[in-house]
Length: 202
Image (tube, rainbow, N blue to C red; front, side):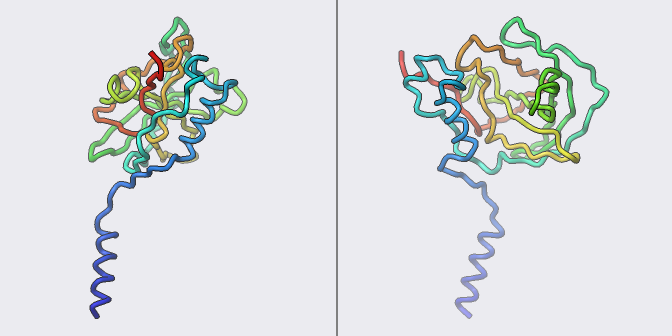
């Protein structure tokens, strides 16, 4: 009887107290990003940065930043020229609007589709989720971060902010990176994904 009481107490503690899961080991996404950055043929790093590069700085994986979102498709939206960090303009359209809850608050973000990528083999189903949040300019890149998505079959999407990464212009100003529209501002600290890049030399 005493054993049963202890067992039920343990079950209740585990089942009744859902807590966020923090992982200390590198995730597949993190390992893949590090491998890309270490590969001189793919890396956006400058040669002097690549020489000292050991790995990107990530927030620990946090399961609370993995959310289920509903997608409201917007098939009649017009194409527009999204500004970038250079003179280049990127032809985009709002593919849809996602709604989700995070840290007890409700949010919505625009998901974009690029005309050029639609016509690129392997990227026909690609969607682009740029966002800014309250960590920008402190622990994360000032210009915001991106998340890669694919067009879902239905109207629900899994959004993992642990997969948020910096645009290439965070590492080298020669790159042309889309500027995050302010409509995609999240009024909270998204402490997930890739942190700001800090050079190892002066």
